[in-house]
Length: 236
Length: 306
Image (cartoon, rainbow over all chains, first blue to last red; front, side, top):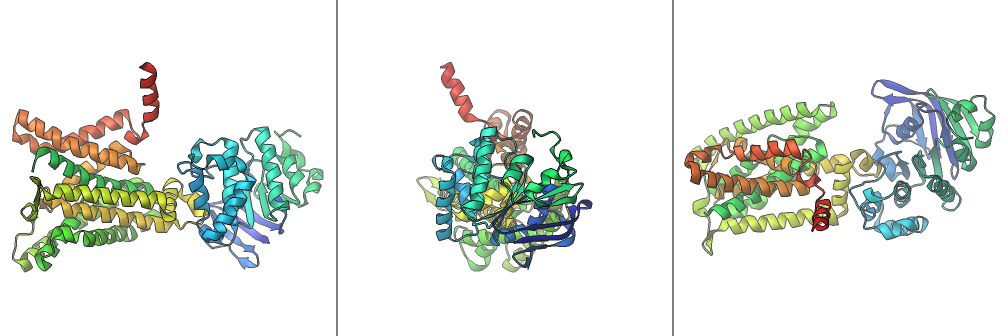
């Protein structure tokens, strides 16, 4: 569904990613793992067009999308959820959902809204509330609900469980699985909670220093020689 | 014109100008020092249409709205966007608007000479008061400015809160990167905010000659009050511009009037000291402006004490 070929990218003059090759298959969860500063978030931003691409190619459903602007990528069915600031805190929950359906027709919007609210029922009673008053977990749920409303086929999640309580983090992983299993969506997941991420993922990539050092089945990553480096600071 | 109705008229027009300034500041981070000249541009549109085509200034408001809006777009596309794209800082953008203001000042001067020559009238200084109507003993501008402000605020409210594009505009103001992620073309919303800013200034400028005499440098004088209104209200909030516009507009007129009673009419020349005092006090004690005050907390505190 998505293929990244020999990607070199970064911010202005600064190179962060070097010769990155990633393949994301349809209806799978692909995890991007790596220590802090390895370029995981930069990879998602590069796919979405928020960085400087120095070289390489990004192909989505057979189409080269390397140079097209972010708002056009949204129309193609790609949703990107940044790690922070992924909702509009001054808008109400309802307005956030409405604005996320900016590019879809009213009929599809209504249908997707019902689906999103059925998946995140905790939002239904808070539609009129300012999104800035939601808890951390609810904000992440709203961010994913917004991606669903935009009729996304590929959802890129940047550390969706960061700063969540264990209860909300566990709920979040369950719902990411649900997106793949029930809604048949494709997920590209950047996550610090390595073991949980590997548990729900089909494929995994490990980045170190902006380069891919592992590429394979998620279950096989635990046997990689640098796996310990990946897990430093995290509970095994 | 009475003191109180004059103060309300002035405050109504200042609100339109400060909302425009605030809107472009939020969307493009540009402190637009040419906003006063945008208003004078509106004044000259009405003056020209009145002199050449005998269109009463009240009926030229839609034309001032559109041409003012186009001036806003021209300012953004030709001067500011190229600088923003090159990563210009706020200071550079501010200097660019100052330069643009001086260019407009020059053009307005040249135009006033030209229009004076072809209409054989005095165009470097004019006022519309003789052409106003009277109702219940008040000048028509009082009712017209009230109607215009109510209609435009209603229009802004419906636009910003009830339409998809308006919500997109607010989303772009809060977080342009995320808005882009949502599929919103943020650049359109920026261009639109400059259109709206110029259009509101155009309307305010068309009505201003009913309240005071317009000269080439009126823009340079009124910009002090516009900035004070926006900063006192809170540069990051349209609601703040509304609050600041009324506070500065009313206090500038009323305080100056009462001071002139005490110290003589010489005080009137220094009326701009009032908004500047408010501006300094705000920067010292409420740097984020009136809109940042959590009124609900104060209300609860007062209720608890009571």
